[in-house]
Image 1 (cartoon, helix red, strand yellow):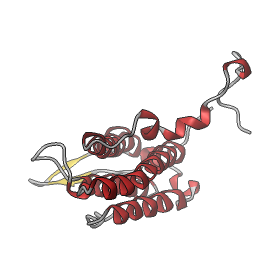
Image 2 (image 1 turned 120 degrees about the horizontal axis):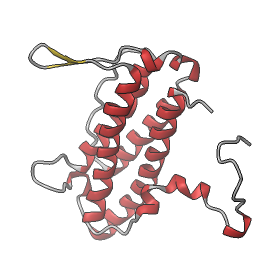
Image 3 (image 1 turned 90 degrees about the vertical axis):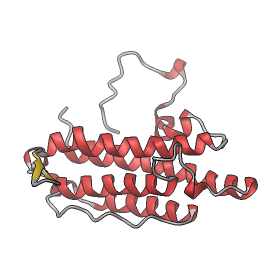
Length: 186
């Protein structure tokens, strides 16, 4: 079975954003109860705040699907100032990522997704290299850092909150069939 660039991008970005959205639903209640300013929390003085981590994760997901679909680079979204605003930004990003048709990704693996940087330099990347070596690593870094900030503040979340989409793959061991193909549809 061949895996499409659309599947790799959308099915990587959207489920992780959905997990983050669910975590933010819990964060709102936690912040109210504990009287914490979570939106400005950070792991270290030189790291981005929670709101900036969300902003960056949203950007890399939006920019990733935009470039791979042959569209212009996505603009950096605003940094939200509330947890509800962060949750809305996450949910809007999920909708945007899921809305791009698979046909728009035709030829994405060889599409020029080079990025201009300072000093008149460019990072040359085709779509496959861009997704694998740029968009996904940056995206996951900011998602996990947002999770780590919330965890560091004392919020009771765990790996299954971070990987909530894996819950859909759980089944009873007695119902599992060893030779069952995990790739089949339906």
